[in-house]
Length: 284
Image 1 (cartoon, rainbow, N blue to C red):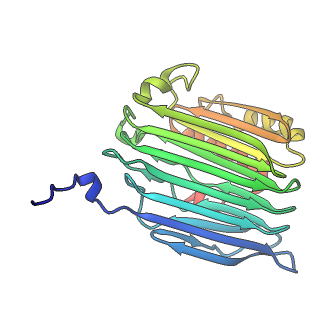
Image 2 (cartoon, rainbow, N blue to C red; image 1 turned 180 degrees about the horizontal axis):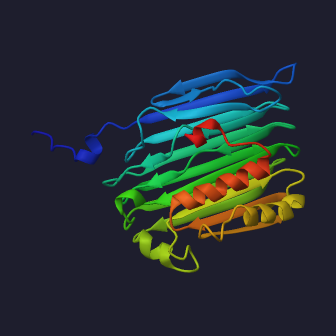
Image 3 (cartoon, rainbow, N blue to C red; image 1 turned 30 degrees about the horizontal axis):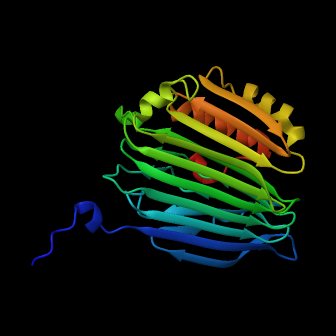
């Protein structure tokens, strides 16, 4: 008997991207890559270092131009003792509409003693009908420092698109000195726009972002973070923002009707908080 044809969703070729890197602090103090593996459309680029003492900068590149339904991307990184790394992306990541399969994007990082990681990807844009399961996991030494920024956009505002259908599961788990320090899972399903319109969820915002900072001095920087929110002009940009701190962590959350004003406010806050300008790819 002839076999029944497979549905298009099952026949379609899936993209699997993977980057794994290890960085270490060299005797002169600079951070350098000691091991790197790349597979599929995911690649890593190393801009020319800025003059003077500065962290190493690495830029993730998705040569596929986006992530389609059923694709899977994984990023792994290990920072040796005292290493200082900034990881960013060349552009906003696009999650295309799915006809059923779920796209997966998983990040797993390890920071050894006195290592410092700044995770600064540009925004992730969810098309109407996108189905994304994303996870971020980090294992930190007690003295390590992690600054994490993530922004999400629901629908393509430039096309007047509203994200009515789709699915998002966004899970963060961070362990410090072997103990769970931060856990957050955000889930959306069904009519996304209706859920985001609820005041207790997003009050109609179509763009949101989180800045999370874990470090020995994190709680002491709460007043600075609130001052930066005011100085960034969030109210004038129609961006809601707030900050809180507890248990060696500092969290800022931002909500906006559009990504443009939110991105501008976030850039001002990040510049002030980090004491240096954002990577050059953010400015193009």
